[in-house]
Image 1 (cartoon, helix red, strand yellow):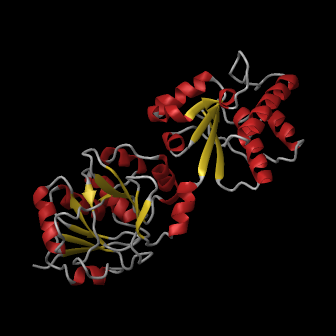
Image 2 (cartoon, rainbow, N blue to C red):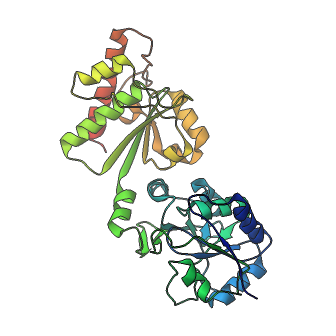
Length: 352
């Protein structure tokens, strides 16, 4: 019996077809689906009979596990444990995209995870509501299929459903990076180059946090960026965020003027709210007040060893380690806050 084929338009994928494919997966069937790299055979990872069938079809050794495909980056935490900061950096940089991360699983082994950059694949995976594995749609040892015709050629009648979306966008397999040990290892160089992986994973990220991301953290971010540029440092990325719910606000006028006086233009700065993703990918998180530290740790308790009060980390000897919020206060308060932050930044440039 031939495999049922559903032809889908990438620009306007049918919700009905996506739900049909998801239903087949949920019930234990095998479905050929497109990704941005190559076509894959998707399967319900919770169904042992389905997995055995997939191994048989691909003629793949049982000791070679399949990677999971997920539709949201933070779902990685459902499958892996002790995820290193470098992994979160790579997720932020390359997911969704052609990158498979090998992480420690919850049984002292390892697990491969990928978030494809393909709306059809992501839609099916999300709607299936079961863990999905998705190896390339070919017999082991043969070329991975870049088009639907190549995918169905050897698998017609062997899988339950196939999604025809034409040619894949990249036609190259994903890059596979092992992060179960430090330093990371690149197991397969695919669509993402080795040097791009090493650059993204190796760059230290420093995150400044205040309340609204419109004054204190903006000052700190701008001052540190300027000093790093003066030092010729390109190994550090500097970010800032706030606790408030509002995104997209500009800096306060007082902040803009103080920084402009020293040649820093922050007119394009827009506030962003602190998120788990920002915290998890940051090597060092510097906050202005104790309440900021508490909020950061509420979102990501595992970041405890990476969170410091700015004055504390800069080793400024002062009975009061918090840096007061100048918003709505006088120009003198703004200037005092700015001076404190500038002193702290000058100190941490010598540390980091």
